[in-house]
Length: 381
Image (cartoon, rainbow, N blue to C red; front, side, top):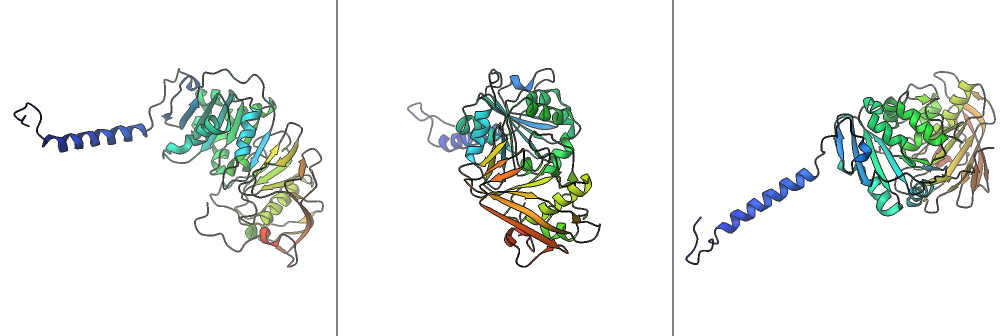
């Protein structure tokens, strides 16, 4: 390049400089979104206020992980049906956690990296708090459940939220590990926990695991309650109040009442009793249960919660359709409440009794629209 007579660079240089600056900006931007390596194995993750990637998990943090824990927390359950945020449910977790340390747990398969996985943590700090810190761990292998840094994060939580995804990953990665023990201990210590979609699916003592990789449809479950896709877990998490409950999610939108009835019938047949109940939660809806064991819908819920009880025995044989009579279904509305001790709904918005004969509800059965559907829409996950 040549200077002009005044000693300044010629105008021909400016396009070159612009390209250089643009290239530098692109490189910096790309690097800002790339995961960074993990800390030393001797350095606790909670002392680092930065995101990083480990071979077995991803870590995101918002706030100050070195801040003291909450002086006081209160037991509570935030049961969210998925399909959209219910802000008051997240505020419930933050408040019951005493504004302390929130831990968000997720799980995925493969080596993909999602930079948005820490967004719940940012929202806890910026919208739903105040909280001291929100740490997110995305499990990619079972080995992560034995990592001392990850176990310390979960053990140090004042409130925990289990995000959506595939509940099968939670079972694969956590069952029989220190993470399962830490989650059970968290609840025993009287601290709040919540879950949405897949996260809610594993909060009951009993759960539908989806370990076959599919999603059980009501018409299939009713046609054969012993179908290979009826993957039911009987001893995973042990959350007080949910010890005889199996939960279900996206409830009305995906017509899951039929499959929840089949889940309950199978589990009661296995237990040789009729005390296991089903609890379904609609999309963009949350059931908030206080330390007294009484649950009410979050005020910004878009739908309902549903309690399913089986007072009579069922006819269950492998390869044959389900027959069951007098299934009791209660719908929780804004004025309703659910007491977990007697497992009864007060001021139900609606109550129905349903018979299933030969795998099909009677044509005049109430709640027909949410009992089953003929097919799932394409692209549903």
